[in-house]
Image (cartoon, rainbow, N blue to C red):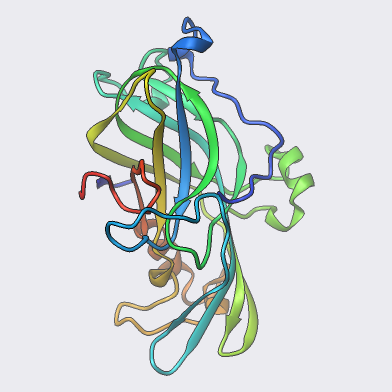
Length: 256
């Protein structure tokens, strides 16, 4: 996996593939793709036994401070796969360049404490070769995303929400940023009719609330207008990876 600059419980009742690239494909010709999430890889050579399970809080320390993360929520939209033979970006709207997996916004609960990947959602995908996955970490807007915000008022004007304790005191971190993320799939993901496919979005939570020297940061100091807002926002962006993961172990199948 290489980065381009720039399961958990779903909060939606229904997810469907709306990519125009498969408009002529019948149900029998589609590949089943699972979009998964992980925060800890399973041990090497051990297939994750926790697929689809959300675990316990995760604890981090720097020797002096202790951070316990009990819940992580991400708001994503416009999750797309880019065809390997396409020459334009997904954002151009060219009909045959990308498969749109989910328009969103949708809320994903990130799995905690359990090694391996948990399923976020599954969709049908037109067979083909895909060399990039793209999505937006999206700040939910009360005006543009009214139904979503009505269902999740705690995520109004938010794209990331983390709760837990820092040195025993409860905190809530709210990330209020929009960013487009693009990840190369190398080698490309090849979707066929014969076998299901799996993509995993991996979030290294240990990097989210630390300074450049590795010391833990109080998440409260990273909220809007606070001193560490930009540091944590950048940490979150740089901690994400996406890759093919058929055995759901939270590791790139190709070792990239």
